[in-house]
Image (cartoon, rainbow, N blue to C red):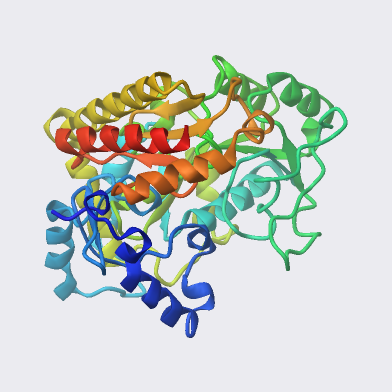
Length: 441
């Protein structure tokens, strides 16, 4: 196996990738098809198997980006790809129903205890819109509360305050709106209220004064789009109590956490039952699928036709078969896949923390074994404001050094672990962490 850290050529080790990127920019805007990829190294990959990726230059990487989280069973998992291949001859789209829809719905609802009814779509961004729409219809109220630093898709009405400037005077509540993209309509998010996360008092204060206008609170149960920040003890329980008391719909955005942190998602980890939940990423183990699920009385509003949720490619055969195979594999042998993921992930977290101490750095690791985040900070991190003061330049150097050693977390410092990561992967990764910290220090 050839890895970057076995080479002496430096940047020439990805020469063909760089040539590809220049050619791609002539035909593809920015050379990429998602703006998230603009910030990463312009590496062109040729193939992926298990925990490894190979680029067009022949370099092999231990991959912890995993497609930004979906590949919980590794790249090209045979149990999933074989099932998808088996269904290809059946057809792909019927503009009608197929029995796989009910098979997957039954499997899905057996895993997610809050799911009385489910609808399938293709992306988390899309299902966020469906969730907010049905919550407004159910409550007949306009406002939705979201939290600073959380990401719920790229649509105009919700793409606000993921990376806002830190307020200078007293961090006002609610936060002023910060649009994340040129071209966003400033009016589309008028019904969105932004509060700081992990702050029970802020929620109590705003909801207490404005409950009659609030349709829903939407939250990542673990703040993975910014720093892998865990909820403070009792915080999610507080959200549940407040929303129940005021007939507000509690929406868990489990696009990242769903089927990754546990078979039943973060709601299983924290024993919280939200009214609605969103899922994507790990649900399809690499195939495009998303879901909105929750209480029957709310979800039935789609069944009446009164609340629209549509999509030509919803419940296509490829996505259904991939997700069904993935859920069955994750459930198999007493959830053996999760035991493997959690064992490797915990060893990695512990090893990275130990390496940081050996080198005398302020390297922090936060999250859970299946998904965690690394950053440099000399203070506790519990929300966006405290995360915003971490040393991003040093993190960038650390991640670049890891990539040179053939280890690939995401470009923002999040690590996803798959059931195919091995003890050898773990050892070579911790060796790379040691080497990278020597350079950063």
